[in-house]
Length: 221
Image (tube, rainbow, N blue to C red; front, side, top):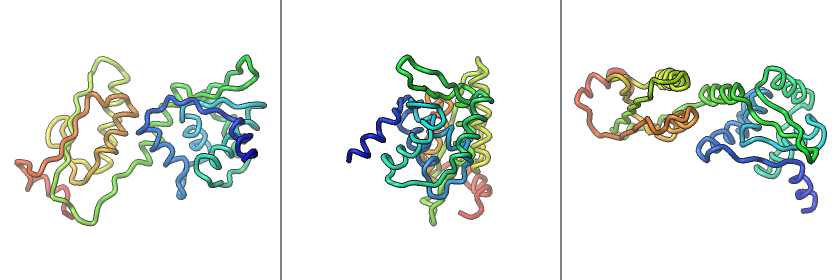
């Protein structure tokens, strides 16, 4: 018990990540089939709200990662110390993370805007929609009307459109897309990552007017 408590003091998580995104990042970060590189792991790890570590930056980070895995998930995964050191230096050099020293001697590590953008790219690239063995006969209709008065919204709109295309959605009208399987959580996650959830609507319907035409895009149904 004492040993676990001492390890908890090695790091402090600063929670600024919403629950939905946090859960998906945790899943990405700690999956048994994790295919992410060490740099991806570090970005996901740091994104869980920021990180406050004690002692020298890299050694403190390595201890924090070990404590995080043991305390939060009760398991340890091997990750070479040298890889962590190299990846940490790379992320710092490329300005994906910002490292600042506090008055109490601790070091705070946070993602920069560039790092947050890269996290979104990593998260979206690993996002998939599970297909059930049998279709329930219902359609999921996605509609979005994202403002056009800022570059951030333009980027979000393009990224959302590209991702739903990659996932297999079929466009039936401008900014109206349809898909046969349950996907609300995945769509909300995408919208949340880009902070455009207020401009997205998702409906589940049992019938659409031109269903025969739409079904041609999903021939396996």
